[in-house]
Image (cartoon, rainbow over all chains, first blue to last red; front, side, top):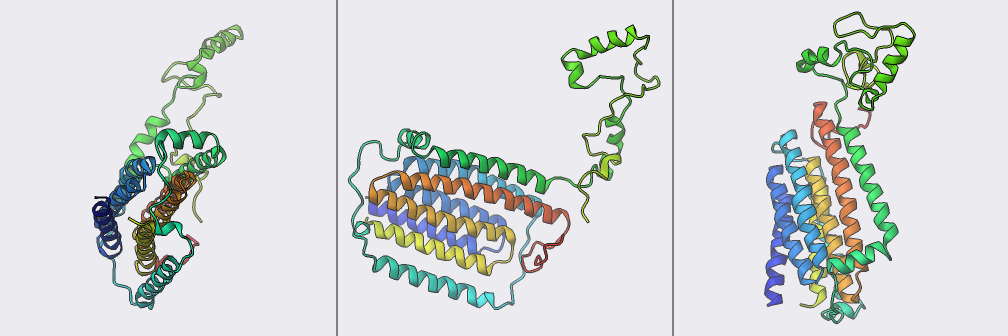
Length: 240
Length: 99
């Protein structure tokens, strides 16, 4: 039974992998990779790696592939032109040589363990409970480093893919909304925590009067510069 | 099934991915082929974890998944930046880094 399941999953994984490499349309290549990942999750289950299989389906086939599909839709990758370079011939040859080498290594390996069916099964092997316990005890440091790496990657992706020129021409009519004159201290955190009242009392004590909407603005008005308007363009990482 | 079968599947997937990285020219498809290679390494790690009866290989596979997710995030961010500047989406044309 497990042999049948293994061959179904292995053929699915290999067909998916070949589909990723050969299909011309990037969207179809992404869908082939989804097929490949699901078949690989079945192989993980056959190897009693339950949590890894679940993570494979949820994280990879679920989240990462959605990201791919969105980027394919955004970039609109059409059919690519066939390459005329020498890599067209050398690439498959290199892959074939690598495959032959790896098969020689597997067949001629001195490892007796890979001839058998693995270590005897012990209860709880590969379950989320066991993996979670190991991650929070023996492998705590790699776990924390991985979380830091994810944070760095998320920040890096936002920096790479952000809009660099402030507002577009379509958003120009929105610019005056963002830079509309406001009374002092409104729309700030200081107002939210109630500092404004204290400041008003201070101003009135010194004879000043807080201006209202539409009136002439006091000198210390806080203009919003966080949103990248046309005025704030120069400070916004212009490319050379 | 003997565990060497799993290693053989892993080796084949790795070679397909390596060939794809060399042959294809669309950066998006190259990222997909990198995913194939990382998944082949994952399969080998999980196979050896089964062979030894310890979970270290499985945790290694999970960490590799995290690294692959980071790589995809940054790579796709680069791709979006490339397409926003109307540069050609082709690794043969993108040989200069001076944007």
